[in-house]
Image (tube, rainbow, N blue to C red; front, side, top):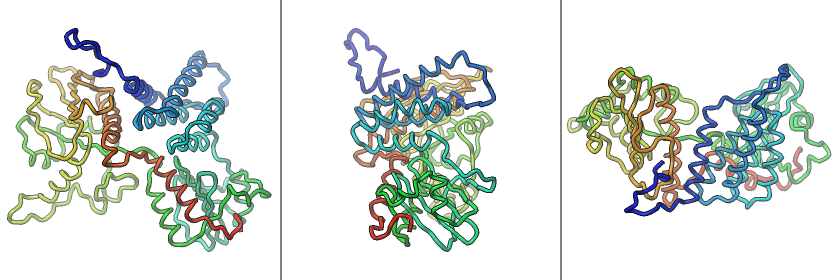
Length: 445
């Protein structure tokens, strides 16, 4: 990596930054965890895996590395990487291992210097330690997210960093629990709030009036605050521009007019992620218009503007404001790296070039170009110029783009607040718990 590469004798020895090396270690572990399959418990399998001891030792080492960086971070970038590593390691561990890891993690976090990221880590460990308990009934319907509740009775509580909402009708009840790192919704055949809260959440009925269970004031302001919270993803999101460059003389207009591409390019796109239509897209949309199928729309052209200029402006506005660009060069010239066609924009701090090599082998040439190499935090796994096999190029580019985007967000944090999605959700939940507490009502009344 460029950070670790020694300089020649004329320039003297390189002074290594502990922060940079630590960030590289965290990124390396995070990348490694991404390619590992999750560990699942099998109650019917009594065979002992000979690698279990190695896995246990590796888990402990990863947790120790992440905890040290999270509790004593040298930068927000380091703390963000540490949180991602900690959550990834814990979520991929066997359920039988999570209790051991939680006993090692939680005391350290609870005694660490308070920060939103530390509180987010505590929230994640506590909510993923065990499956949330449910009544032993075949009629329980579990949903993936908050449900629209048309109820005759609606009550909400703030409870230890989470928002509990109960909607009851004459026949059933809908319970939604909003955490920083996930949201669960259940429909149960009961309308007794006392029974539901004590059964589902194992709350002591005699302690329901404790300060930890605070009733919230219902109304339009609370509904709007919960709607904003529900639109905040429980996972980390990244917005990266992808450009197809058909030849080395392509103009900006040609880059914006490209539709489709070569078969190898389409295969590369499928490796980056799932391709979905924008119209009525559910989930993170990156600020794109999802009201219509923008990929097939044709804005009206005026007499003094080229055809599809509206679409060109929209594309350039989004891609030009991205910190990271992935540019697929679908031509043979590999000598003119300085003359690669590109889009002008305010940012594009990192450009990741991907170019298929001719000759029969499924190989790609990649190059990572940083506009502010001296101030940007180190990232990987790709760097400089490399030759990458086709079966792993999309995964390597994807991971590099994610790490580069995090590094760019840290570099621009003076202009744009660098906040992870789960960190923002925890802030919102705490603000709701402070702003809407009903001091006049007992929690379960």
